[in-house]
Length: 409
Image 1 (cartoon, rainbow, N blue to C red):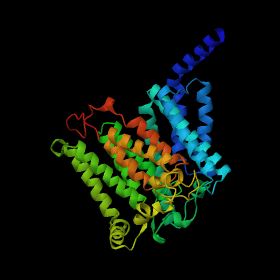
Image 2: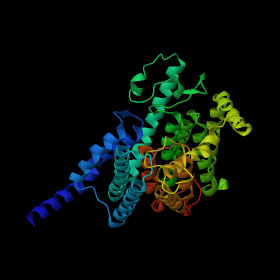
Image 3: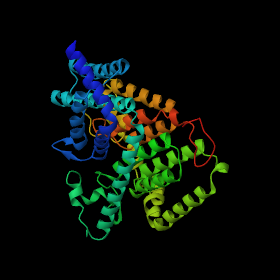
Image 4: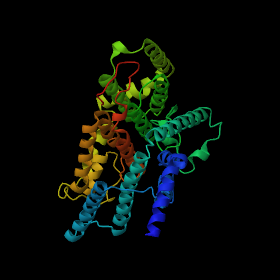
């Protein structure tokens, strides 16, 4: 009993102290999100950071999972195990034991981490702090990206290669269609689309969770500009869809303060003027090429990504991590895990849409734009959806000076 009392006292002490030094853990979690594309010996920096954080939080008594979450985790783990066991019993080839074990451990690790971090942030009411830290880091990432682009345009005059030590350095990762005249911003990510993926999660979380005043409108404009400078067609399209949906659902034009309209109008006009040639080459011409069939990348993402689904064993899949990397995560789930992975993925998608159309659409668009369920990008998206999908505490916010809106999107 004495040992139990001491342990409880230890937990209570650090529960109080979390409000002081919890920011340190929030910064590390946000950094893990930013450094997800950096790798060393087959592990991402995000995984190194998370592996370091979780044991410390456990020692401090901050790792807690409720019964419902535990049941959900066990169900998913059981599905993964059943999928591999059935493949083994049925003698379905190929069956690479080492790959299956490693991939299963990594998938279970991410599921466990998402549950732990969600509970940690929610229980300590760190939603505001966590979003503020991510907002700050997103601006830093954009500034670094602009610095790198300027350096490349100036014949690599300014040093930046050190920032790419643990990620791609080839010119194909930042040239637009192989043209050196158009540099796509990717900052410290491995690809421009990955930067856009990161920024879209930050932008949508802000739209869902925070009231939009002048300061936040400027911030969202900066983030939107960051997405645009990636010249990633899928990410710019996602940006336009999310912003459009948000305005349609939440904004009453008649009640918007005129100074907001003038400010945003001037900013957009300036962007269109400065980047007119880029917009024409990267967006307008790209759209025309897609319509005429010259550019088939969109078709490949939406249709050909399903080619790896084996029609004879679609229900059980090729095996966890047995399919080559697919951009479309929906196709990836079905091709790898069959219905054992696809159905839970669809159910989570439906749940997200029911909670918020905006977050649901974001989840769908990002998952047909970037593949990989064994990396940090998908699971940070899930974490942000779980944290900021429920914004009832901010349901009385004023949108751009307009009336109160209780309905969320």
